[in-house]
Length: 201
Image (cartoon, rainbow, N blue to C red; front, side):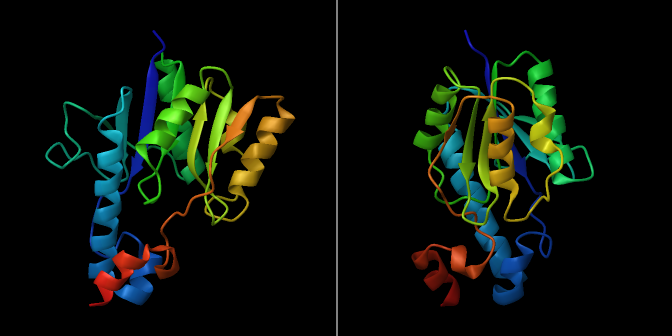
């Protein structure tokens, strides 16, 4: 049986500390409300998955939140940069004996259970899978083995991260699939129209 792990990167929901670019135009309260909607969506699409799941908390582990302890493992993020934090979590997953590992955040309202299942199915026959985001980053990265190159020499949170990672795949001769281009929610323009209309009322 192939052991599969989904790693979910999660920022503890504190007023004024989440979705700061959204907060710049909508205010801290509405930015937090959007973030909580995104988190709820992530919980809805990941709960049914027949894979192991771990939530990586930014600041502290909350045993009494909506990430149910019986369904989600919980750990703290380790590292200074986003790259170091993802690298540590992925490496830890493979060290625990998983055969395929996918990493997501909680920023993509368009991400679906089907796309997550497709990603793990892809990793049965390919080395890697990536879901590019419209801002140039990625909403998902999956792999069958730990490759530190994916996390090195990247300008994190810039428009080049997904393409640089795909370049790593090509340079290393890996087989891979590119998933549909989706939107990570960072600004008002990224919000679904109906959500934005509700926020403005």
